Length: 121
Image (tube, rainbow, N blue to C red; front, side, top):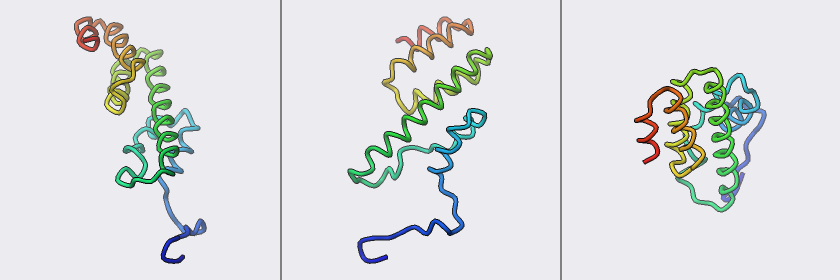
């Protein structure tokens, strides 16, 4: 370690949320726990060019996990949970058209046609 560089001791006892998030994302049985780990962009308050791709990678993984949960609960006809995860996805990415389509379809499938129209508008 010097004035400009620091090094992490991988032999130390630690818990690293990003590593845990990536590991759990590979396990489809724990996706609900996985998405709960995601609290937003990596080092959000830090601007550095090197953070762009890791942030995008983690965000894409989070979106993929949410989409898998939505699909799982939609197939199981557990629309309450499917809608919960679809709303989480919309909150993080409000301009994603696929998310809006899912929300409209889920509301329609539950018989909430006015809710589906509300999502459409």
